[in-house]
Image 1: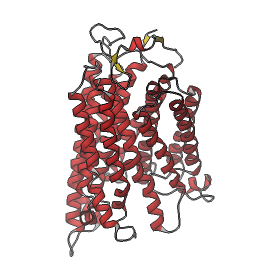
Image 2 (image 1 turned 45 degrees about the vertical axis):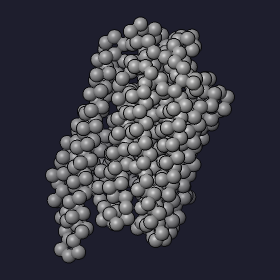
Image 3 (image 1 turned 90 degrees about the horizontal axis):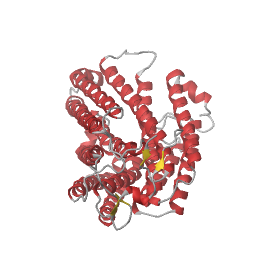
Image 4 (image 1 turned 120 degrees about the vertical axis):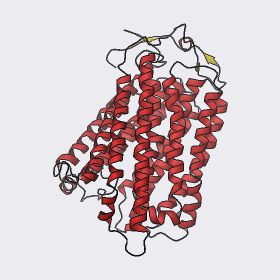
Length: 496
């Protein structure tokens, strides 16, 4: 039995969500490497796992594990920010198992049942929602996601309403409610292809380049409050500026997806201008993270979490900001749309902005969920190695895909005469695809190094350790207080 450093016992439900997120994360990367190999070994695992099914599993696992991560982060953060126990820990646990079962059954359905048959068995003829990228889930799964989201939002919202309101929780709630509301467009699948793509982008773009950015800002602000001791007023001002730019550029920036789907021509200008502004919130995020770490009032013992927080801002700016800007303008996107340049941007943007911020909150929260202020030096050293290995692996993949996309445009799309056919072009890109597989394997090594860090031995930093005195910023004034004075120490319940 160890002394608990959690301020509120109900925060412990987040541990289930974090563990599930990491397991599904591993599955996503394994299927990603499988896809990379299928680019160069076309009949790999055929007919058991054809390319279209592997890709569907890869992207769906990404969405599901990030949602698990967001939900776990909310269950951990909100009780502490609101200074009250979670409204219903039992509901949180029940929703976890419902969501996990629905996700597992959906993935098994993709792997074991032909997709057309799966659509027939799950009532797609009643309400046609299947067959669109990222939204391939059967109708019962989509309904289940809505039920889980409503239960989750009820639980979190009631917790905030009965407790202290902070800027972090309010921004987080805006992002989470926006996420749930935007998902409702996945049920709209009109016969008109232009309207279909427009509503599809309402989900996909307004998630990742809209409301998810609010969640990102809230999670990052929370970790920086706890690890730097900088006054909340300072962090709040930065957060408000970041989300203002994110919403201003992200909402109208949706237009860069409307260039070539049959929408009116004015979207060429609107999409180009506001998409060009989308790197700004990520640049501000980078300045924010470095500024807060530089102005820190304490050296938190969990330096691995601080590294992930700073890394999130840098990689997010590179992936979502710089690589997005590279091909977002209409005259450039005319040639690069749907090429490997798009894949390079997508991989780096998701990793930098959302994968890394979920890892950040897990790295900060998991030690406290296990009765420590921070992991041992050996554990943190492993975690920092995993950070660099994953970042280098992702950089190798992204640079390989960027080079492949550039050559693809040069050979297939720029020439007005004698352009290579699609498959002939793919043959010329094989060397880049092999490098991409190497980067993926390196990333997987980094991922398992990260998992290993949670099992590394050594002397962990415990509550009251005289060598690591630090406070928690629990008040709007930013005053640092000892976490053990804020609330009496509690005991870990073995069942959690």
